[in-house]
Image (tube, rainbow, N blue to C red; front, side, top):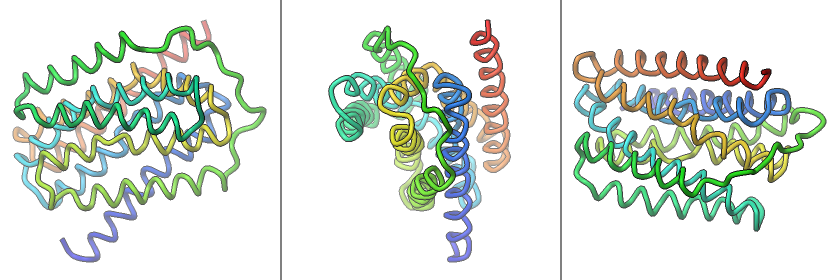
Length: 264
């Protein structure tokens, strides 16, 4: 990969991630934690990451990497579960440590399994069931801030998170398909969004958003699974674009359903 392509890759992925975090920060007070959770579960980490990998690698690489990213969905769900429970006892760093511990433990167990579709479903499904059984219930409706977060507040956090995502995704082609998918499944966007939400809207709003993000993670899982099946029948780059558009349409439909339910 040329230096210019590396720079473009980092800038694009940084801007894409930052845009979602900035939007989440500005809209959170207006739409509430449920719809915010749909926004922050868009695959803005895996999507741009696989897009730029597809510029250098063939479809089999994307096919294998997407399968790993799908399998780690269970770890992301447990990250949210641990964060929400830890929020009852401590602040941001306590919740972050608990979430990362849960993600790391389940993700490493997942990585040790054979990289096949049945085992990927088993890892993602078992993580989903465990997250549902342990999910914090009765969290209640949080009290949001009187005004949305300021532009400078969310843009600084969005830029930091975007650069982190861009750096990981840009290094992925040298890591191989399995570890590329593994790192792209790291909850970077969720962490950055939680950092931003916590700073302005508080601990309970952030916990409620990550609690609501668990069902919304079906958007991320659908992207990874669709990409796994599309890469091969379609060229790598085309598969990434089609899978991402499908995930965006799915997210918009889910947001519409949740919005109507919220009004009702």
